Image 1: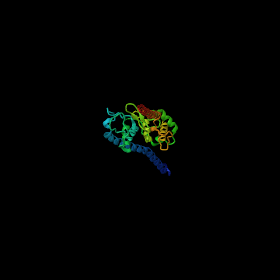
Image 2: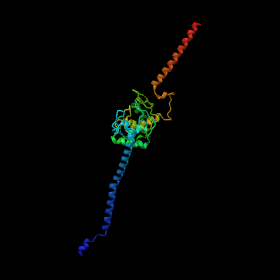
Image 3: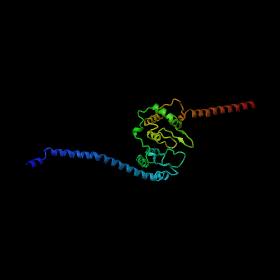
Image 4: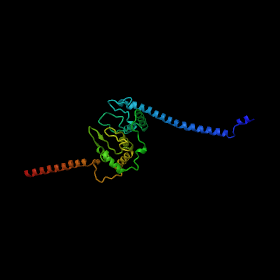
Length: 269
């Protein structure tokens, strides 16, 4: 009888076993649920890379090489990152129609989903600048005055102090920034396309990029007044002085010729 009573289970034993089972189930869920989500994300990324590779083979490989290694017709894309692809393809500069000193902006031939797939494939070739998020490029609350200082220090030499663009050497030019989306301005600063230098976060922090974007949008906005009259495209005193020399001096020369001609006629008569 003593042995039977010793082996008899406690009335709460079943409850304890049930609680342990529930705890184990919860632990297993906590352990495997994140892994399942991560696996789903990895699968989606792999699909994007596969689709991007197909698009790349059709539209990019002839110039940049089958593996992005580059050719005599196009540079290597290894390490340029997704931001460079989003900028170049998202502004229509790529695929390029023909070689030249600088590839111009053109109508975009890919939709955003295809651009994202191309960017995913190129990013898989090597680490590089990542496409910024909406919060990174949103200029709301940025310091416009600070952005103006930064722009005049780092950008105005090429793009003009209001972002109207300007000529460079060897047939290159700094494009007009009016109407360019904040994302593409940010990506251009990240990647330094064509003749433009790059400004990574180590050189120009994210907030300073936002300040510059806010300045560009402000000086080119519809509500911005120009108290100087005819702005000549906002190209500054050099072009305005040239305008004065050409038309002012030209007018004086024309008047001098007219006076001389009439004096000659008067002497003959």
